[in-house]
Image (cartoon, rainbow over all chains, first blue to last red; front, side):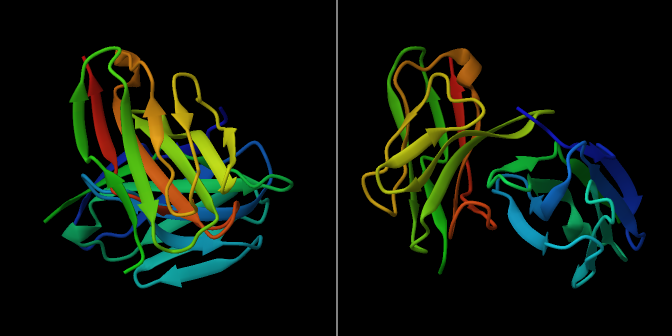
Length: 111
Length: 112
């Protein structure tokens, strides 16, 4: 099946640093979702985006729906140890109702 | 509390021994689906259900069966498990297809 290109695959950062990750697709999407998965748990929805150019925040997290509708970005400001986990993007193309998931960005925060 | 509950959380079984992983949601969601998660491959959809008695194949349905006799339950059945079905399985539900999904905590299955 189709998959999104998500990068980077992993990141090691110092506590307090800002983090950026992104997903790109060869198809135009009309919805983007960002999830976080912690060890031993299922993915938890962080942010949902529905319009090109949309910028949405959830606490220290900010996500954007790219203008081209083929990409999305997630930023985490002032990272803390509990930000550790795997972050997934998921997108849905126009005319379908099924989400395609990225392969994830593994984030590790060094105190 | 709104939740998706999977059981068991961990399972080790032998090749060929039929097993069922249960999934239940308490949000009255119409849409439910099963995913498997493997390293480097992200989440891949196995089967989904639009409503009671309505199911369809996802991207990787081979070797799996599902049923949806009640709205809240969506069990995943492996009639004859094989080692390549060793994986982390997630059930998810949403109000309808195309809306945000709520995931269960996962079932780690090992087939030896």
